[in-house]
Length: 392
Image (tube, rainbow, N blue to C red; front, side, top):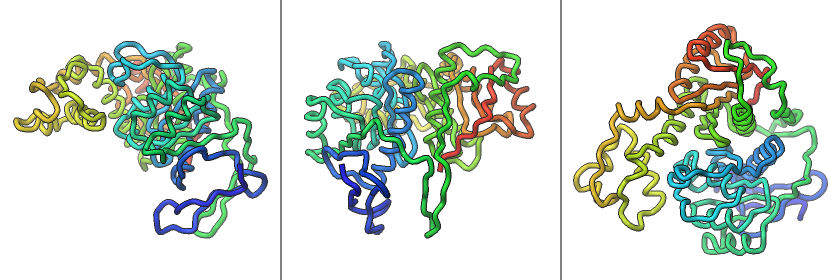
């Protein structure tokens, strides 16, 4: 450990000098391999806070996949069923609970997770390292690594893969600072806990039933949002984020963006997608990109004559708009968190289209009545947490 660490440059190559340092004491991290940069550390420290809090809230190993200081995915280590293993392309891999968590976190939005920075709540084991080793990623932060895991990861990216070990007992000062335009901002750290029954103490909707699995998923959504650039909305199902909308100026745009990602996640489970006839040795990035195009309205971009042969052994049938809607109508039990209140019922209308049945949001809009009325129209249970989770 050291008091400071010099960096190659800041957010951009022209921003020099750059470093991370402690005003008092030593840095709570050790770089075991590679040379992490400014943005890597921003992703690493935000991601570590997220998974640490998920582990504390659920008691299960947690992982997140970060890109540009927002999570592309976050999850806890629930076991994967056969369909999940197939859509995440891990049906031939042994998976530990921690590996399950990262497979889920990366699988939420594989396009956005390309080149991610990983955060793990627990000591990285061999199973997790082997999965990481085959994916395109910039680095990983964890409280430790087994000898075998560290050996596997050190070989990644021709030996330059960024591996950070963090002291799990480190606690930051209660007051934090940030400089913008030469001016220092100061505020108390956001230490709000998002794992208690008080989250569900105010339920204004007719449906007041929140099963334990829904409460768990809503806690995952809210904790994820706590470390996501605002405005933000998060859809969660079965212990993992399936759609995160980050950094949008309008709440409805967050809800649409995250909802579209949730739809893509679910459409990847459609039988036509599961049975696509891939050519041998197609690269994972090409496969993921092709799936996203295949299930979009631009499907002809990968199905046109002279093009489909690059990806498939035979030309697949189109997944029609009607088939997609019929499949999405079977998506149920989704939980939705928002980092602030919903100003209009249109957010609920969009959420309903992606199977949302449970919502946790701050409340406090002048149009709360309209939001509640829209929830009641669809039998959605909604809790007003009274907690805003802006993060910038």
